[in-house]
Amino acid sequence: MKNKKFFKTKIFCDTADIKIIKKFNKNSLVSGFTTNPTLMRSSGAKNYKSYSKKLLKICKKKPISLEVIADKFDEIEKQAHEIKSWGNNVYVKIPVINSKGSFSGKIIKRLSDKGLKLNITAVYSITQVKKIVKCLNKNSHSIISIFSGRMADVGKDPVPIIRKSVKITKKMKKIKILWASAREAYNFMQANDCKCEIITMPPKIIEKISKFGKSFSMLTLDTVKTFYKDASEANFKI
Image 1: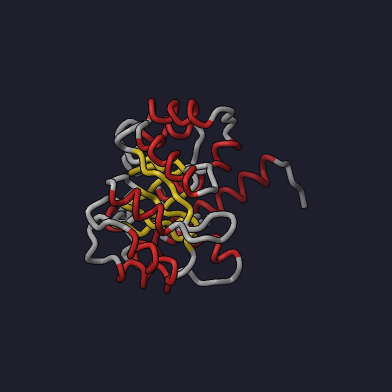
Image 2: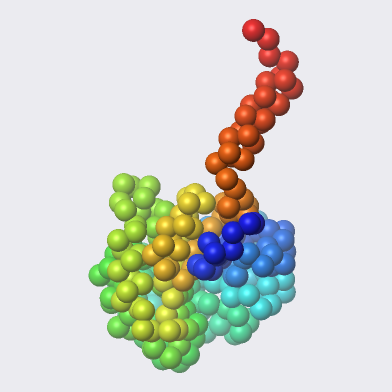
């Protein structure tokens, strides 16, 4: 990694894989972790609580987001307090709405007022960001996760939404905007250009970040060498 001026936006690794968290917990490039029930399931978790505690035995200092798994607001609130008790570095992920489409505002406000660190997730619009900000206690640490990658997947440009969200929260020092669901390494440059505080990335994309700063001539040489090596090893003939 040759050019450190790139690295202003903090990188969080999006994973629930124990081996990957062990690896990146020691990596200074990664400032924290985000998980969700889907990642937990794909990583082989059978018991949500015990698996989460295994992750927290590895990740003791860097922030890690663990999501509630309830849909009714009273159960969400109860689970949030339980998850918060697992570690001081835990951010409790609360979906901006439940599966019925009801806004989670009242729960967000109650939990934030009680000082819980929250990560409000599955956010896609400025309207949602504005509503969330009104519910958050400005003295409590909070993250608003805007699903930029999923936006781009359906042909919507996330950059204007990220820029405006960063502007809205600029004076709120404890509320951070997070560029979620990154699809390529260049998303880091976009997030950084927007002055977005955090970007969450899967492990494979984080690996690519370490190559930032390579010159075009070096990229050309690396590419040509790779093609030549593969052709030779395949014993191709013309």
